[in-house]
Amino acid sequence: MSDATERPPEPPVTEVPVTEIDPDAWERACAEDLAAERARQTAEEPGSVADEFLKLADALADKVAQAPIAGAAVQGAVQQLIEQAKAAVEPVIERNPDVFEHLASAGTELLAAYRAAVTGQERRWTQGSESGTKGGGEESESSSSEHIDLD
Image (cartoon, rainbow, N blue to C red; front, side, top):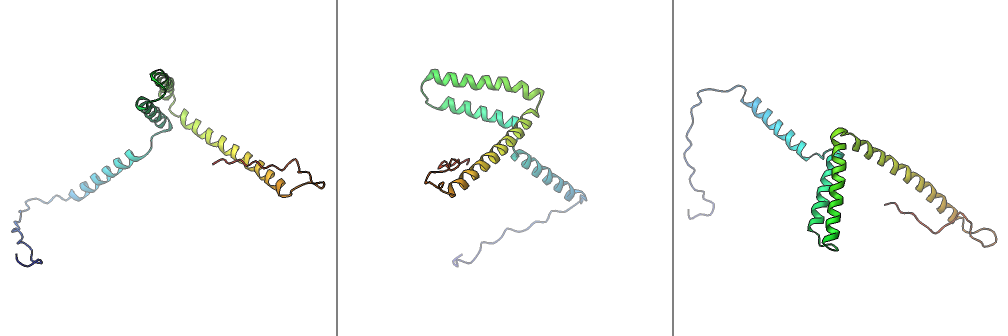
C-alpha cells in the first residue's frame, strides 16, 4: 500500500443461503419502525397541565434544596410550602384531571380580556396626548405620559 489512493483488499463475500423467504418481513419491520417513532413522539409531547404543574413543583423543590438562600429556616419553610401545595393539588388531579386544563383556558381568556382593555385604554391615552394641550396651554386630562407595557 505505497499509494495513498490504494485501498486494502476487501474480505471475501460469503453468501448465506436463503432457505426461507419471509413475505411479511418488510411489513413487520415497517410496523416496528412506526411504533417506535410514535413512542418517541409521545415521549416528547408535553403532558397535561396538571402533569406540567407537578413537574414545576418538583423542579422548584429541587432548586430550593440546592439554593443557598437566607438560611435553613427559610429553605425549610419554602420546601414545606411546596410540599403542602403538591399535597393539596394531587387529590384534585386524581379526581378531576381536567380541572387544570379548564383553569389554564380560563386564565388565557382572562389575560386576553385584560390585554384588550389595557390596549384600548392605552390607545385613548396616546391619542389624547397627540392632541397636545387645550386652548389655554393646559394639558388635557385625557393625556398622560404613562405607558403600559404588557410584554
